[in-house]
Length: 239
Image 1 (cartoon, rainbow, N blue to C red):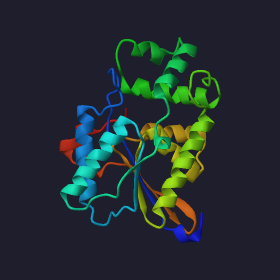
Image 2: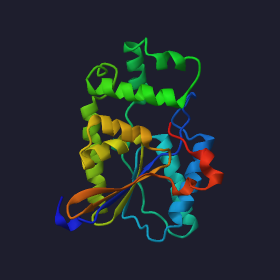
Image 3: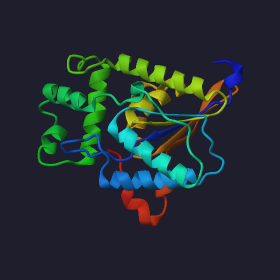
């Protein structure tokens, strides 16, 4: 990167909770709509936050989260820059990942247990093992892209966001898998650490990276200032 854009910041938002376990995962749940509303109010109330560029993935959960941010910004007469829709910020195909893993790991106890009902802890354990299988190339026949192809498109998306932000701040609405791949590249994380970061990122969580003197620093990970009060603790979610 050139010295002229040494002040670039990336404020990455994981979408609010989607509708896991329903016939349409890609819409925000009732809890997700509330998360997005509270996040939007919090961001709009931060006078120091000025965005040079706004971009989101093209999936419905990204659009619905971004719409809440836009509405809140307009309500306080601080409209956001016109958002760009960029499909390279879309999440990996988690349904194909889990189907592919299930086809090869029929005796996995977490997989068997999930047939009796959804359990977020077991889902996260499954996703972790499925990621390791994808990384090893064992699921390439089930996935629309390899893990390396996923990393490469996230890099392209991040490069574009940085270029548009210049010495300012880019606001990005995306997904946990994408954001964790940004962390992998910017912080030189290994695969196990990348997966751990992915699974620790809460819905509507804020991640902030800043480049100082040519080096990237992680300032915030899964930051939830809009859900800090006791009244909002029940809104925390990770799937």
